[in-house]
Image 1 (cartoon, helix red, strand yellow):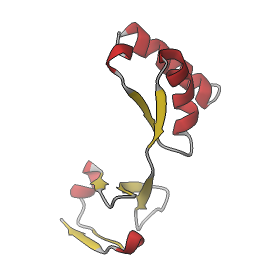
Image 2: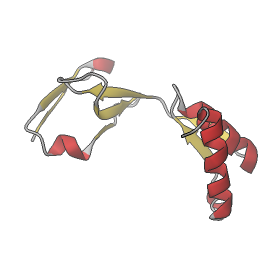
Image 3: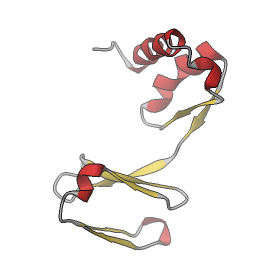
Length: 103
C-alpha cells in the first residue's frame, strides 16, 4: 500500500531507474485526476516533462464506476478486453459524435 499518489510515484521512479528505463523516455504521460500526482516525482527524477492525456471514461450501464473503455478529446476510442466478451451495445454521443459498437 502507498501513503499517497506521490509516494506511489516515488516507488515507481525507483523501479524505472532500477530497470534502466529512464533513458528511453522522452515524456511522462499522465491522466489527470490522480495520474499527474503519480507522474510528478517520476518527471522530476528523470528530468522530463509531464504530458497530460485527457480522456473521458466510458462507464458500464450496470455500474458507472466500472469503465468499459475511454474516449479521447480527438474521438479515439479504446475499449477494455472484457467489453468484447459481453453482449453489450454502447452509444457515445459526447463530442458531437455518435458511435455504435456491437459484439
